[in-house]
Length: 557
Figure 1 (cartoon, one colour):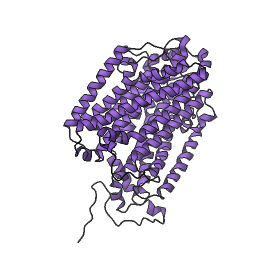
Figure 2 (cartoon, rainbow, N blue to C red):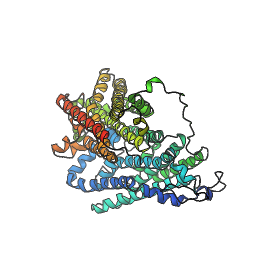
Figure 3 (cartoon, helix red, strand yellow):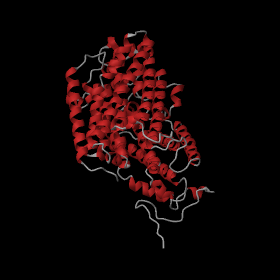
Figure 4 (cartoon, rainbow, N blue to C red):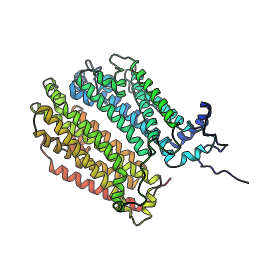
């Protein structure tokens, strides 16, 4: 008598389905069961993302009513978002001619809703498809009565559920805060539509490569390209240009909620989502389970000598991601530096609020633009740093860290090697982006001095980026499941850096962000004491994280 072993989280065993499916009904067999299974396994992470976006929306809807209490305050923030700089940071700025709290949320802060929704969906699809195959769980599931496309379909169904929930909660947050809800559904639908587009894009990238990190990286690269195209298109002409329409992020913004509302741009999002999803299914049919369409390069039969250290192994694991980030950041730096001439032409019309955000000196606005963009690039490098630490967590829970530590490699050496490589990578990204930005800006305005300024203005943010990296490392060592809390530090720093000067917040609130202690060169003078304190705090957090990692048990569940 024989028995069939099943995984505790897999559907009940049954006769396996022939891999050569003849109908879509066979190919989708077991989808409903997998949806329930995936929802159960994602009962913490997915609600955290959805509720996080909803709470951010409720915060803005409630807090901005306290910050912008008069029509003059609203007009001031509306003026800030007009022009080239506002287009780069926020978008086309519809509804800010006669601004309301609702239109300010949509036009000034709405882009960040879109980015968060996109990231949520990228990680969601990768988690329920490629990671399942990479860890071997998909093979256990497919040994049951489960169709070839059931797993991908279940992940997409969950993405639809998550984005519909986000849409509902965003609309509900406006109602809960007592705001006008006439276009709340339209704004929420725009956020959900952008999320679904990137869910579909990730469904394609997980077919291309057999590694979740690379698949998420490719989808993240697509998001970065969409952001850069949108920024460039919105900066070219007020209200957006033809270039803007090449970005799915722009389609959600072009719904013009609380300005001149229109639903039809979301049809573009729906059409792209359907087309890309169909491509994902087609590609899925052309590969084996666990494999990617692009096969990995075969390695040497024996590891080369240079891989014999934890630092070398960490560098090898992070190499692909670092190269991708470098290409994207250098390209965006060159683009934003290259429009310096356009920025100069817009300086005469900048409102006082923009002048305050860019350093407060109306006679040196090009320097202020350089410092502001250096801060923006530093935030992007911070994303790389956080993801690097999260990948260390992935190495642990997938069981790859344990074999490494079973050798003569010590825990401190492994931890320090990985975090050290991430730190060096972040430093290299800041330097490369600064040089690219400086060269492009120097060519645009005809001043070679901006090459050095671009390099230094980016590099000076290193202590702030390192501190966020150290916070993530500390959380990994102490409470690894809470690494995601580092994103709250990132979001707080981003909002405060761009909008803090016009929000009339107490100084102690500004001091909570490590980036606020960094001088925005060349507009401001270098602050050596702040750099020293940030560096010392970074070292303390990293050491504490390493010590706690040495003491705790590995999490291989």
